[in-house]
Image (cartoon, rainbow, N blue to C red; front, top):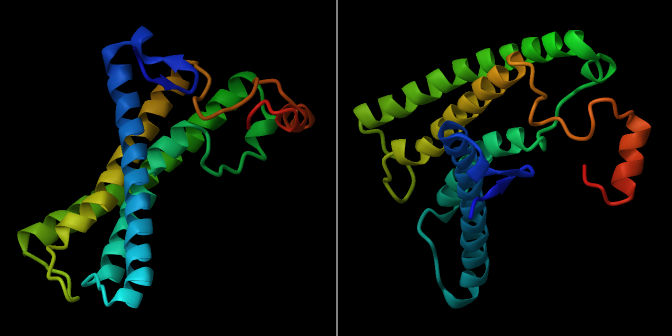
Length: 197
C-alpha cells in the first residue's frame, strides 16, 4: 500500500520519485513533531509553574523547535502548493510563455535558497568544528538545533531543483492547483463548493 501525495499513488511511480516524495513528506512529519514538542514544552512550562515543575532552558528548546518546525516544513508546503506565492503575472500567462516564466521564477528561487543553504550548512559545520555551545542554562552543542535549519533549507533546495526539472520537461508544476485554464472566479466558485484550494 502506497502513501498518497497530492492525489498520486507512490507505488505507481519510479523509485527516485518515491524517494523524493517520501523525503518531502518525512520533513513535513518532522515539522509536525516539532510543533507538538513546542506545544508540550509550553504547556509543561505554563502548568508546571503551579506545581513547581520547571524545564531548564525551556524557552531555548521551544525556540529551537520552532526554527526546526518552520524550516523542515518548507519543502512539503512548497510541493503541496500551500506556500504563499505571488502569481499575479504568472496567472495571466499561458502556454510556452507561462512555462518560461515559471522556469525563470523557479531559477531565481533556487539560486537564493541554494545560497542560503550553503551558508546555513557552513554555519552548522563551523558550530560542530569549534564546539560552540548554547549560552543558556543547558550547554547544548549549537550544531544540534542548527541541523533543523540547515536540513530544512537543504530539502527545500532539492524540492526547488526537482520542481524546475519537472517544469523544464514540460509538465505542470506540482504546486499549481486547479485546472491550468481556471479563471479566478472559477477558482472561488470551486473552493466555495468544497472543491479544495
